[in-house]
Amino acid sequence: MSIEEKRVREFAYQIWESEGKPEGQESRHWEMARKLAEAEALAPKATPRKARAKPAAPASPPSKPAAVKKPRATKKPPQA
Image 1 (cartoon, one colour):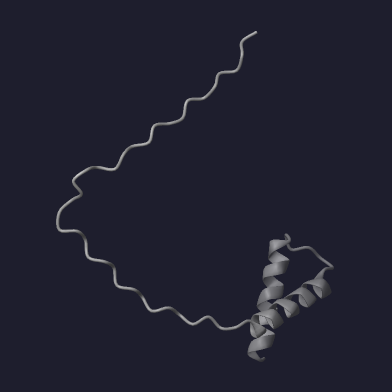
Image 2: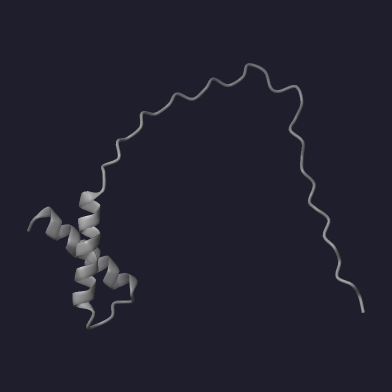
């Protein structure tokens, strides 16, 4: 079995499971899976980015703590 056939089989199984394992939908699932595998094969391969070094932590803590936001006031519905 080729890698493509294996991938189509995996996709078809995932589709079948996601739909609640219905009976009589095999040909539709296989067709959907074949299209997904084709699209996956044609998609450009992403090149992994190099991990960036984290910036060094500041030597001393900031002189002023960050402001704390207060919750907005909500309007009360009119009473009858």
